Amino acid sequence: VPGMGIRGLTGFIDNNFRGWKRMRITGNLIIDGYSVCHTMYHQMDIDSAHGGDYVRFALCIKEFFKALIKSNVTPYVVFDGVDIDEKKKETHLDRRNKDVCRVWRMLHGQSLTERFLPYLARLVMVETVHSMDGVCCKVVDGDADSYLAGMAIALNGPVLSTDSDFFIFPIPAGYIPYENLIWQNWKDHPIVADVFTYTAFIKQIGLMDPALLTLIPAVMGNDTMAPLEGFTLKVLMNESPCNLKLTQTTVKSIVQFAKRFESSSECMLSIYQSTKCSKENPLANMQEAYDFYYASVQQYSNLSYEPKLKCKHHCSIPDFVVKQFEKGKLPSLLMDAICLHDIDLRVAAEDMTNIWCHQIGIPIRKVIYAITCTKDKEIFEYQRCLGNFKDYKHVNVKVVNHVKYNDEVIHVPQLLDVPAFDNLKKRYILFGVLGCTEENLVQFPSDIKLLLAITRYWMVHCNTNLDMHNLLSVLIIFFIDALSKHTIQPVESLPYKDWVTDTAILNEITSGHLLQFVHAFAQWQSLYHDIYCLNQLLLEPIKLLSASTFFESTKMYSCLKEILEHGVKSAIVQRKLDLIQYNSMLKVVSL
Image (tube, rainbow, N blue to C red):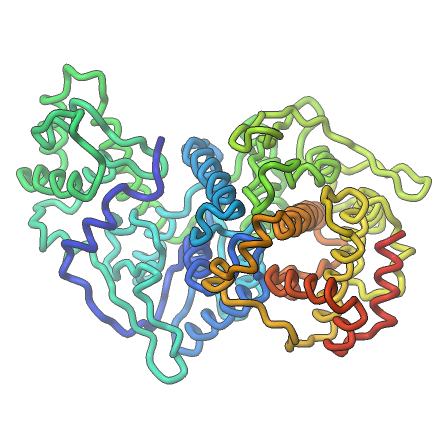
């Protein structure tokens, strides 16, 4: 199975490369959006196992880009799009399985120091970046690495990422691993970074042709290529294949092998002659690596790129979808439904012994799929099985092409008809699929109506042993807090490093109380995400309050404990919130 980046290369660079150059960062900076999202979240001392702390994450993202812009840096953020050729399908499935195991270990006390990207973190990253002036943002079709490298060449700026592929791309301005960027004290000091350049690397290791670097990913594998094994490695390393492991030592041997040749074509010829009796086809990997790291980069470096979205089943994709996609308005659930008709939802922090947290949103997703798919096509989801938490089934989902709103039946539009579809009926679809009417929410601000409808649906369908009244109270307190723009929370949560070692918290994990809390709010987040997607698919007929304004799992759990100990009224009074507003919201979501 292809791996994350290039196996062994980061370790090899860390231990051998001596050409890092400390530089002040100004001008254009090309940012690998999802890569930086993961690393930024994990470097913050916030929760990653129990639901996510999106308020603080969004604040960090804003501070980061503010620091760049104030320091005369022009950030260009690029996000991956649809894996239409499914080159990374095996990689995605492998990562999903690893995430499932990681969540299991974290939430059952086996490995509380592991980190996991919470379910809505990517959505928060995209939303926050798009909300900021001075940040150029783009979504591309497929893997963004080649486009990032091409843009970096065209704009003469370095790439910021954590992906080892960028050690191979021929980027003159260099590559900055995110952890090498020193930006936190930007108000007092210039932003600086230790920059890697491929020219310094080639000079140090003594390669005569820069393209020979592509031999490393060709042998070691990357996100789309499986590594070479057996006879090919024996040729390169002159060792028995059974003794070989893909490590930084292998990278060192590949470099020594590549130094024998004046050009990549000479190297390919030598490998072909040595392995032509082998069942392996190393030349295919070498050609694919060259195309990925060199040929495609030149294609993108003219900046004339436009998304070339296509459907795997050859269905036409409307222009409005392409435009919304490029702006980052359509999450991966929607794009996979439109282009692949095959969906593998991201793993959430949930109780793996309980019913799948995404089960709660299947009725909403059936409506989404009715809009995104033509009538004669099928759509599939990977759904986690109850029992063995590692088992997923590939399910043919039956779409639902109508929604009841009061006594009226609203037929959902086909994708091509969405822009011209009546705006009021779009709102009926959103509220109807949640089993409520907008008329019941008329007294509330528009951007919280859908949030209350989501919460009402969750209250009815949530699978938990906890008192739903207490869980509703927590959410409503945080909704009101966000609306009133309060920033002071009287009950502060533990830093994450203390959270995962605190004895009382560990006892709550093993007792199952915290696990039930996590699972209940995993279901809420899944619902929120599905309704967010449906709202965006319908071109946002109603505003939806961002999760980055109120959702912080550790503080919410602290609030729940406060309610259990002192009552709801105490929690409301301490926060100086409006008790009448709380009661009116509670009444609506409890109907």
